[in-house]
Image 1 (cartoon, rainbow, N blue to C red):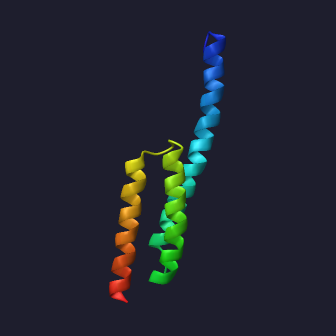
Image 2 (image 1 turned 180 degrees about the vertical axis):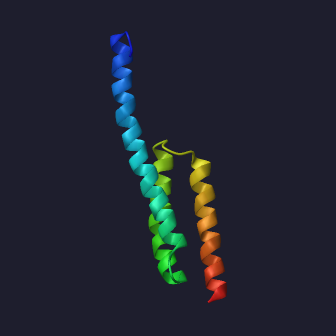
Length: 87
């Protein structure tokens, strides 16, 4: 346990931030999974737009690194292009 008032406050704040960050990371992972599990390319494109918005938002807020968001958007776009070629 912390011995200082400021340390106690830091622990409280860290718990709140951890819950906040976890919520948005899970939201992003679900959005990514929705795109990859879409049955066809047109539906995947719709879900990709939403996933890209979420990834950009959490990168801007500092929850994930901007390169993490960029890499995932790139992988999803490549996935959609492969789906289009296969169809």
